[in-house]
Length: 177
Image (cartoon, rainbow, N blue to C red):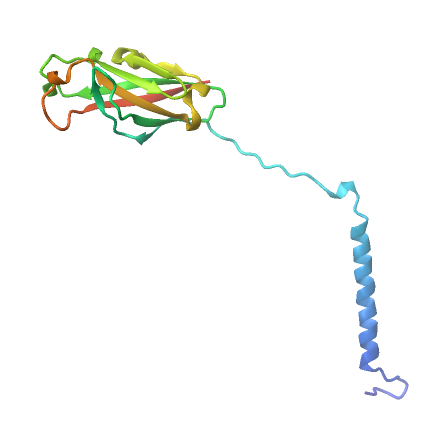
């Protein structure tokens, strides 16, 4: 290819070689600049979160057996929700409901008792649990699960023969820092 008579012919291989050498020199300069990084070229990055406190109860197993004179064999199970590391939890019975017609004998709250077990066991009457009992963080056991068993201080002969005598309870957890 000739443009005018004073111009020299340029071949394609020479142009390719020149371009290749130019790219190689640029790459070496770039690599050289990365090879000499000093300690000022690094930095630490932090990620933070604000975690709100959580307190409550999750029912894991809602049914247990009501025992007569002795605690029922099947326990209901709850999980205490408390993300405070060393805090305490006060567990309270906040409501109890039963049908008087299920029993021949006069029935009232003081005849019912509950046993709550984690790593430790606490027992008490309805009156005791209405006031509440305090568990330390370590008392709750692995997974913060507690078993609740119930009994009524009557003989089974004092209850009406039927398949579904129900003692309905409601529990509340109060977290103490």
